[in-house]
Image (tube, rainbow, N blue to C red; front, top):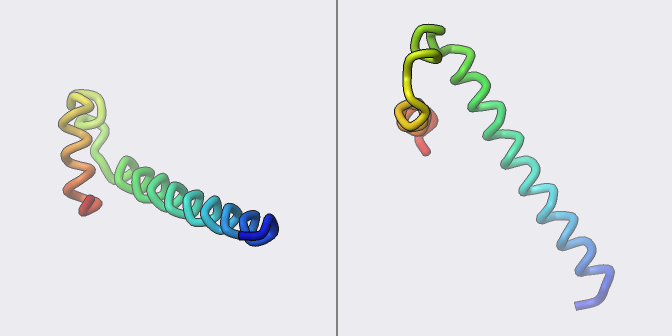
Length: 58
């Protein structure tokens, strides 16, 4: 593989990774926004993570 082809491949992988990460951040922010404040404060993180995974179908 030439150096130019390798650069294009790495750029593409970086774009895909960044887009996937940005998408997950947006999904998590929407879920957090819709969560009732009482549940945010009283629920342990592990329970919140389970709720988020089921909500986001992860």
